[in-house]
Amino acid sequence: MAAPARRLCHIAFHVPVGQPLAQDLQRLFGFQPLAVREANGWRQLALRSGDAVFLVNEGAGTPEPLYSLDPCHAVPSATNLCFEVANAAIAARALEMRGCSVLVPPVSVRDVQGAATYTVVSSPVGNLSLTLLERTHYHGPFLPGFRLLSCKTGPGWISHVDHLTLACTRGSSPTLMRWFHDCLGFCHLPLSPGEDPDVGLEVTAGSGRGGLRLTALQTQRRSAVPTLVLAESLPGDARGLDQVEQFLAQHRGPGLQHVGLYTPNIMEATERVTLAGGQLLAPPEAYYQQPGKENQILAAGHEPSRLAQQGILLDGDKGKFLLQIFTKSLFAEDTFFLELIQRQGATGFGQGNIQALWQSVLKEQAARGQEA
Image (cartoon, rainbow, N blue to C red):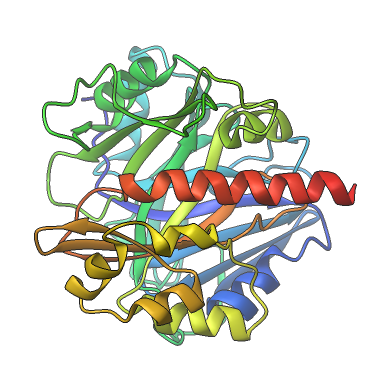
């Protein structure tokens, strides 16, 4: 591997002036302002909940924002993943030797709390770039160049980023998997017994409407790097409503489709998001009437009526369960949403819930089409 990732530092977004992403992260999901930088027509606001940090770059100007790029993308987008590495300069040289485009050569920045070095490289996933950051000698709460706003950790119902799901073009997952393995040290994480890495997990949507191919990747060492999930659509008669194809069309190519945020209490988190006005996807009414679903929920130690009332999905067996709920898109386009996830021993991604999510997304997209 060229530059093994040690931890995810932050996820960067580029939005136009006035787009409410930063306000929504605070108001709806309990993120707290951490640090800010205002320069050259940009306002860069870092927000944190637990160990999850989002950097919202708002505006348009030159030069590019610190620690990432201004890709001038057609729609608001998650544009950059920042990973900590042991040595940014060595990482840049190693990735360049593998044919990666180094968009920002290693740059050292410093303030009163120490120094950091970073480089930005291209990724094979659409407009998504990667910042590789070396900050062993930086002792501040965020990064040099930013003014500290708060040391609060927030209400505490989100603790960290559980996974990152990338929407990919059909057939590209094997190539992307090898790239993340060779360049950043990710390896295949089987989602089903005996899973072929080049095939991944295929989940059909039913009634000939296609489905999803999911390939999960994790770092080899136990590190603070979330799981990467590559999602691509399967052939089928989705009639333009396929959630991955919809993303690719509205986002103008591959990219970060959603972020899974871990919560130790999904029912409390869901209640708080709902009370704050957050919009969550509702599963089909029949989801909770599936044969065995009530007993499954009871076996996980939860009340079926409460989960149904809140719209929380549950999957698993043999004492290992997963609870999930998904937001609607945070942008006007169907290009980015959040997932709240709680694990009770389960390590997968709710294969039994994917079809329910698929149906919910199709229903939401159809409703949007009728309103247009």
